[in-house]
Length: 119
Image 1 (cartoon, rainbow, N blue to C red):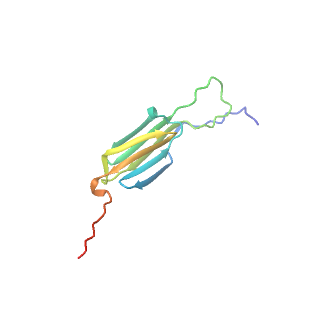
Image 2: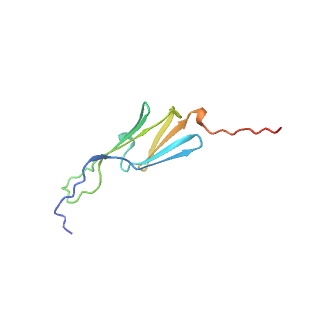
Image 3: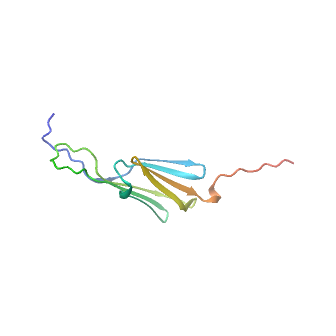
């Protein structure tokens, strides 16, 4: 194996892979951001946009790289949210490189059971 060349990973911004699903009275968004810590994560709402940014720092090394394939840089993901989302009921957490964002729905948008009457 020739390790005399350095393979560079460009520090760049990329979209974090995500899953979005509906759970009773909320919408859940899960994003994979390996290497991102709570301190380097920002989740914000700007009008009708949900914006998620994270930064994965480069590893500190005292030596000179021969091969460098571990990605560093920024994650960015942006979604449009509509009026069904209650902007005061948005929570975010991060665990093991997975960001979970819970978007609560407005009361009028939550499923409700209809009573059936008999005549």
